[in-house]
View (tube, rainbow, N blue to C red):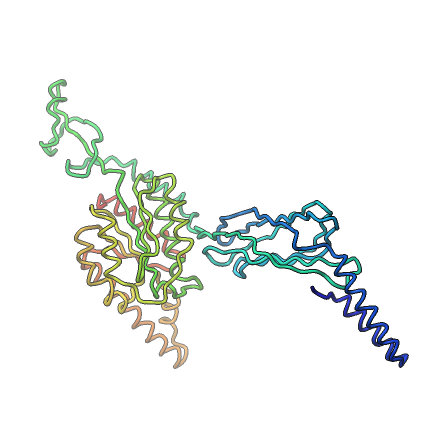
Length: 429
């Protein structure tokens, strides 16, 4: 049961009137009439326990875009239901609040809620509360019912805008005619006439015997190279750079790389780990790799604990048994790397081509350039020290044979894609 504002207003008016008339019996009479009206209103209100509910609408929404969830309410009773329905959702979905409804006997109504999510992940619907108001509008019947529904908020893939440019670079790369020596991991391309300087081991003697000239085989890189993207979801990924968590920047860069690599014919796998493996996506085809990665990334959240470097390294070695490109998205934090993954880098670099990508904070550069007052000078000194430490870690990784990409959040996806294309162009994949 619930009382409405009208009941309170009627009670206030009746009480004030009887107080002005200074009649005690009249006050008792008015209060009794109001109570009787409230009881009658509750009795005459349509039942809410007989209502049936069903949901439909979006189950997948990109972060930053809007979706809709529709709640269908059926009234099997013999009275019209007038009142209010509140469809509760988690606050991060930005759902609208209440809606007034009127459902005829034996009828149904659909209430659509607009969802504007502000966070990734699975978001479950809360309880549906229906208030059925009586004909006098003084009181209502009320009940809450759980109507399950889950919406998965996917990463927004903001770096998709760079994809046409990178695909054009990829097509230009594929159009280059290069003669590569024959060796393991190459594919036959075509036959051409022998010229001085060609490797005699590339001569195709059978084809030469059928022609009046000596011909050699030419080779091109395999298209089905394998790329393993490793996401560090430990405590450093929770830090915000330019208002965005590092993990979200990692996801955006990884999606652009995956889309580009899939178009290039490469196989893409994903591992996300901190103190345990949070996600693993393997064996995807070119057509569904982006969808599978997006689904897996949607539920990833930073773990506020130091990542286990040994676990991440062993998982990579277990997942990729043959040589491939390993792209590790982590922070160039000297303490975290030296205590975690850095001791395992030589082993990983000896078995795979290793590329480390990190998010640089543009505020550090701005602090380093400031010299206005004493506070700014101290901040500049701290920024210079942080920059030098970061450069030291990057130089150490490069000496170990690791390629390093360190860029601000808005430039990291494009920079990582360029590094991938450069490795592909140099035949180092």
